[in-house]
Amino acid sequence: MKNFFSNFFKKKEEVTPLSFQIIDAIYDYLYYQNSSFQFKMKEIDDVVYINRYTFPSSFNHPEGLKEINGCGFNNPYEVLNALYKKMDIGELSEETLTEDLEFDCIHVQFYSEATSISPFLKRILQNFFFFFCCENGSATINGFRILYSSNRYFSNFTKDLLETKYFTLESDKEGIEAIAWQDVQKVVIAACQQLNITLPEALSTKDFSLEEVTVAHVEEFLQLITRNTISELEVKLQAENIFSNPQDDESDFIEDNYEFLENVKCWNSDWKFDPEDAEYFISEILNQEFTFEYPEDTYSHDLFPYLQAELAKQELELMTFDTHGDSYLFFVANKNEVSRLVELGKMIAIPIEKL
Figure (tube, rainbow, N blue to C red):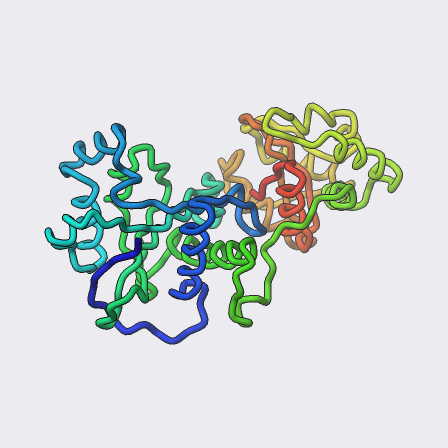
């Protein structure tokens, strides 16, 4: 039961997926059909998880109560009041608590790409919690407040929830928070598309749903990683082989397709490499002399910005397969095809990475 009390600021009139009508529609699905669901989508790595949690029932179990006591609280309602205080929501009264009411929130969890923040950080886990409330003196639920955290896996759910940050539409957002804010809006749109929830026309221009995978997607992937340097027949035969033996968590694409990859112009390198190595192997890949400028005493991953800058002059970009280890299997892609290549890699479960 959604039953919350508060006084709030007047909301801006704008077309945004983070509106009460849209979040409430997702909540209706979670309340009346399934309390959780998950899906994959374009532009977000890995699976998106959306769950409904209820105070107090979601916490009324031995482990949950142990976490609550460890944080200095006696029951889930006290935790909820601490969260309400953070969000400027009026606390639940003693009289209200004696009615044994239930109070719901929505947890949205997903990964954001983080290479723009740090070259050593591929992705970061994002967590958003939506708590419903009454705004502008309303006697019925007509708004929500958001709590946010990044890089938390909620192994101690209560502690990590209490350490979240209050987020508003007006909050200053920089770095990973700015990325999170952009991504959560995409996730909400994608969730609506998954659940067939009608969106305003201004939010319906992009479809985040993944395409149904066919052998044609595998062919396209192979053509892009080879920049069309492999014969069409060989690509078709290899695509059929990969499609017939889909990758899973136990699969090793590189090992399973070693013979084919021998014909692809790649550079297999340890995590440590010199500038001279890069020049030699990229020259081999491009079949032309490649040199680049770099600061003295620069090695390994610190060379990536300088390599990419030089390759960009030819509209090319250095990428790597995920080797599941401390090595690289580099290849060069056309810069204007990188986004599609990454998307295809996710679809057919062959992980590749931007550098």
